[in-house]
Length: 153
Image (cartoon, rainbow, N blue to C red; front, side):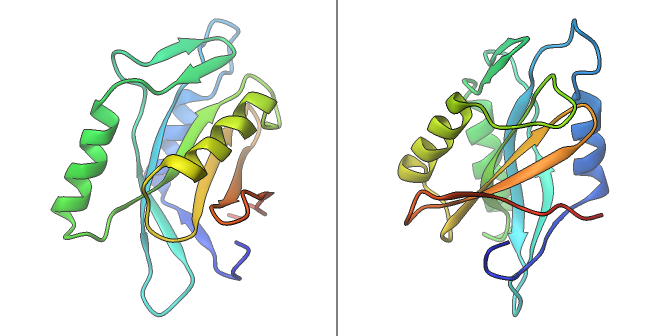
């Protein structure tokens, strides 16, 4: 992360992302929201939940659009159940390519989210699960700059 902290994806999150990878030409893009916790007295974040495609979301081979209101209901429910420690951290989706690169549509959408979404902190995080790698970007709400993060296990 640009602040020097680390972001950890739990094994459950990684397993879920793995399930939705587009290994086969018949598989559609999938996505959802990223939820996690800011770790006190550190600059670290743990991503411990993601939503998955729901009825009403728009999926094609090369696009995913989160439409279902259930994603927001889960964000709100998790926030209440956790006494405000589970936060909306960003969005994830898949790409049918080995090593994912955000498209111009992705970048435009991410910048719109940085401007319009309500979230704690200065940054949103964006994950793209490709076939061979899962990559993450950090978006700054103040500058709208989007930086690829180094992913380590």
